Image (cartoon, rainbow over all chains, first blue to last red; front, top):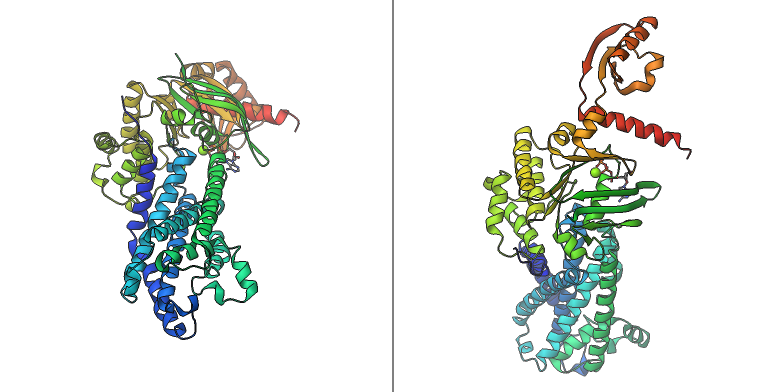
Length: 258
Length: 306
Ligand SMILES: Nc1ncnc2c1ncn2[C@@H]1O[C@H](COP(=O)(O)OP(=O)(O)OP(=O)(O)O)[C@@H](O)[C@H]1O
Ligand SMILES: [Mg+2]
């Protein structure tokens, strides 16, 4: 008699192979992009922007923001592009025919997205440390890790939802350009929100991405715009809510099973 | 004996199209079952419901007693499906594709069985080739392999031989027959009726989402064993229009009730002054049975006011 184990580890493995086989585009390219941001922005803005009342150099301040931005964007890209590609080529059927449960699918796609996001984030961190070695002395590395994991989980889940929803690549691009990118850029990647006018400062508090990046940055400097525990609570709530939505969609087979 | 597949009053509508209109079907364990019907009859929709890819509007389906929705894990584990569409994942080689598919079913060390599948499907030399580099027929054989990788007791093949060359079709059927002898239940759709006639013990014919015939292949053949005549002529006598099974250019296939009918036909041709280019009597084969049933089904469908 044949014994059957769990199917999701294979789906996770496939998700990892999928980006690993094209690591040049999926890991190296985003690392290079982040590096360019660092070199250009820190060079141009170093003397113009002061963060945390001048206690942290702008170049150093920028690095965690760029790392987190890379983590978030690549997590989203991984699950969303995997799903849309499978849907458009039709090979999603290979995942729909086996006895994979909604939870199995969720775990595999989101974990795959998290691993890609964290891999790119580590790459960005490794390269930028070369320019800002002082960052190696992180006061709270576990906080940084926790926010990176939660942020990548949130964006991996958003990618899963967007990938299920979209029928075409341009719809996915629209989701990314009109939702993910603005929320990331307006979250304080390049600045501390305390340097913003009051109105924008208030508005930032409604952006969940702000808490991910602010909490992540706390791990590096022990300084943040919002208390890290508050950020953690908000980010955790978002992660859980999105997970529930994604699971409900998978359970109903929305857009996947006709 | 529990049925391998049970469909109970399955109905499914897509917009204005009633793809399935109440299908009841039972396939027993160990059967080699044929599902025939013209394009759009609902064969793929039925299979998709069995596989859990499509939800029925009403009705239910079970694989080896497991409901395809409420007990989907057991149902899907028991079922292997070769999809009609030629799909593949361009990231992987043939062997990787099969290993991954086995893994989705939770099978870890399936390499021996995968080697066996590759050999039977004549894919051994292509095992490490990327899926992209395969010909259409080879890709289809990989699809067959993927459906078999978890050794499902029930195997459904949705037009598995479309685009496969004659020689390989033979070896593919040899393999499927062997699986059937080993106890696997086989359900097959095909538009090659000789194939269905040679392989299937029992056949269901679908038309416009309904089962219009369901019997053993032998009964279907004998029940409709009436003669047919192949006629090449300018036209068919007016009184014989209702007997036309197929009209293809100037080539007509007409249904005869018995040999005496032949005289009546010749007489009608003579009275209407129609010149005969060619005329041949033909034994019943499944194609003719199919054409008769389908022309009957069409007639009964059009007879019902919309
Ligand atoms: N997802 C869908 N959306 C809309 N219509 C659909 C969908 N799937 C099937 N149909 C329609 O349902 C009907 C039955 O289609 P189905 O694919 O089951 O036919 P089939 O018997 O498999 O035909 P073929 O021999 O061409 O494969 C067709 O009219 C088809 O257009
Ligand atoms: Mg079909």
